[in-house]
Image (tube, rainbow, N blue to C red; front, side, top):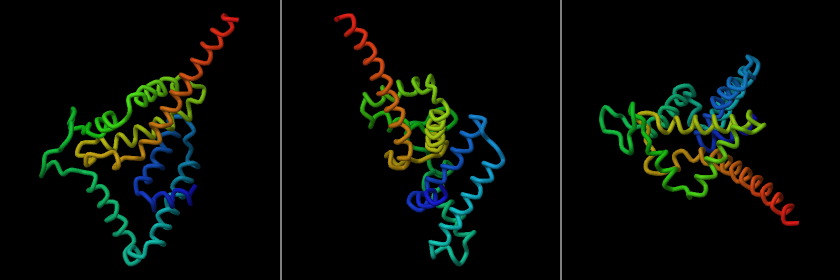
Length: 193
């Protein structure tokens, strides 16, 4: 897991949201233990050490440059509302709904419908723990995108890591509808015979 997370962070810094997603999920499914948190902290330290070790720019001042890198990425995705007015569709409490709007206008309608069906089916599923993990993934990433002052620059590429979670729920929806159609078709076939 540490190697995968290290490679992910090296590829796209948004991977730093994986540990918080896992911690929230562990708390919600009541599998949160100090041992698991310690393990996640150790993994995160290994990842940070790996990034520093493989990035020569960081070698002379690792702590300061790590903070500077995180600050850079925080600022790139934010609008300073003291200087300029936020763009996009602003909701209550300054929440920027432009990212949600972009998802809905760029996604095919059948997929949106299957995501909604998938969310309902996942809530009723016997695999609620795994469905909850994907839901937490979705909420954490969307929470980052809609926070006051968030900037998405008119594209879903700034939060593309939400797309696999949406695809998973869409797949669950398609599977659920397929099951229902198969069951109804089987009943119809028996009646026809």
